[in-house]
Image 1 (cartoon, one colour):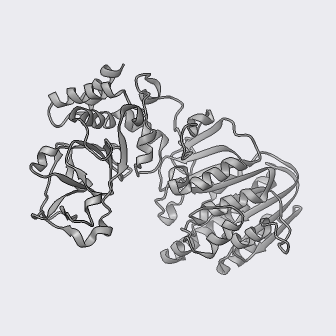
Image 2 (cartoon, one colour):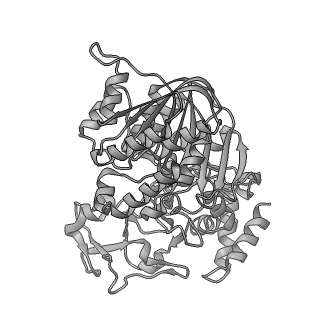
Image 3 (cartoon, helix red, strand yellow):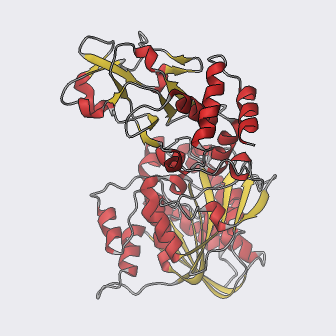
Length: 495
C-alpha cells in the first residue's frame, strides 16, 4: 500500500499549485523519508495510541502501519487520530488508513479540523474542555508557515503557555504536550528552530518537557522535499517525553535514499552549550573536533578581549527618505556587504543597486559610528560559497576627512562601545574569522546560511594579544592574503 500512497503523493505534488502549497505550508512526505521516520521509534507492546497531525494523504501513518504489519512493532492494537484541515485530501487519507489497517486490530479516526485549536482545547484543562487524549506515539510533517503575533493561533497557544512563531513548531509543541510520559515524537521540520533567536521559547519548552534523542541531517538541503522544489533545510528529530536529557545521536545522509547514513553520539553539552543564554542547538556532523575546539589558545570570549559585536545599526527601509544614490555634502558613507571585496573596500560604487550614502541629520545621527577601523562580517551568504563567514576590514583611510559612517543591517560589526578598534586588532579579528578552522567550526554547528551576531559571540577567540600579533603580520603582507597563508599563520601563532 505505501507504493500507492507514494503515487498519490506524486500526483498531488504535480497538480497542486505553488500558491496553495505556500498558503497551507503543505508538502507531503516522500515514501522513503516516511519509512525512515517510522523506523526511529522504539519497539513497543500493548496498545499504541498514534497521533498524525497534519496527516495529508496519510504517508506517515502508512509508513508506521507498514512497519507494524511487518512485525517491526509488537503492538496488539493501534488507535490512530489523524488531523487534516484540507477537505480535498480526506478521501485519499481515508482510503490510505482503510487499506493500511486492514486485517489488523486497528482503529483510524480522521478529524477534519484545525489541529492547533483542537489540541489547545484538549490540553487546556478548562472546565468545559474535552478530556485530554494521551498518545504513546506521534509522527508528523507539520505545515511550515509563520504565525502572526495577533492571530487566533497565537492567542490560543498562549493560553497553554506555548510561545512560538511558526506552525511547524506549534504542531511539535502540541504533539509533545499530548503524548504521555515515555511517549515518543518523530517529526520532520525546518532546521531554523535550532538557531533562530525567535525560537528560543520553543527550544526552552522542549528542553523542559523531555529529551531530544536523535537529530538526522540531510547534507543536501533540497532533497527532503525535492519533488516540491523546497530549498528549506530540514531535519528529522526523535523526542521522548519526560526523559532526562543524555547524549544525543546525530545521523547524516546525503539524501532521502539514506544509502550513506552515518551515526555519531555526542554529549549534550557539545550540542547545547551550557553558557549559551539562547540555548542554540549546534549539530556537529562528525565526531572530530577541529582547531577551534581543540587548541587551548583559542578559549577567549569577546568580552575577554574587550570587543563587542552588533548587527549594523542602519536599517535602510526605516531611513528611506534619507538614502542617496551617491555622496553629497550633507551625507555620510553608507556601507553594505556589496562594498567589500577581498582586496578591500570600494566606495562609492556607481550604478550599484544599493545607495552609497545617507543624509546626516537629527533623524539619522544616532545610527552612525565614528569613522575608524572595524571588522565586519556579512550576515547572509549562499550555502554554496567557499566560506560561510566572510570578514572584512573597514579602513578609515578610504573615507579621508569623513567623521561618521553608516553600517547597514546586513553587516555584523565588531567594535569598542560603538567606536573603532586598533588597526592591528581589527585586522587580526578579520584574519582569524577568515580562517578555514573557523569556517569549518561554524558550518559544523550551524546549518543556516545566516551569520548572526549571537553566533559570533559564541565563537571562542585567541587572546587580544594574539589577535594583535595576527593583525600585525597581516599588515606586513599584501592586501589579499591566500587561504593557505591565513591558515598556516594562524596555526603558527597560536599553537
